[in-house]
Picture 1 (cartoon, rainbow, N blue to C red):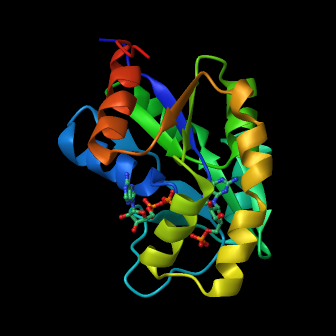
Picture 2 (picture 1 turned 60 degrees about the vertical axis):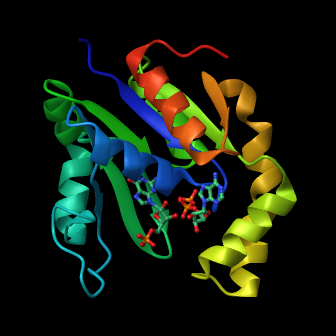
Length: 185
Ligand code: ADP
Ligand code: 5GP
């Protein structure tokens, strides 16, 4: 079967991580891409698992060798999707990038076969309640994340598939069927 490069985007708290991690656990033929970053590892993070941790020089060298499908700077550190890792992995498996809208559209420019999937919430109220329920952000961080919501949702028509994450299991199966090329609305 042909392997697929899929980028999954959507507002913070919509359930991207939950969906992608479940799919990767269920399917031996699907992996999540590991990005490169110049930030220091947090406690418990391992090189090659959460990220490939690079020095700034190493990152800039790889950038000059065109080894990123896309990259960006966040909070003073570089983050990028490694092209060689994705290309090598695609020989054997499908690869999912969990990536923001700007990054996903950049990847599609470089790699037009990329399948773009946006996960959307059933309602703004439900999204707020998931972010609050996750409990990993302060009220201010939640407001900040929600302020990006309308921009992200406005980019839906640039995506190949828009999947509502209402019933989690249905959303997982929808993303899985996009991977398999059998998705029906
Ligand atoms: P993201 O990666 O998009 O920021 P998460 O995967 O961390 O979002 O999900 C945010 C929270 O919402 C988590 O606590 C998760 O368990 C919960 N969640 C995910 N999908 C659903 C769903 N369909 N219904 C209810 N809660 C959900
Ligand atoms: P953190 O340092 O908290 O792990 O991530 C900080 C930010 O970097 C998050 O918004 C995350 O989505 C973003 N990020 C992580 N990997 C990549 C990547 O490969 N490319 C881009 N453009 N952003 C990334």
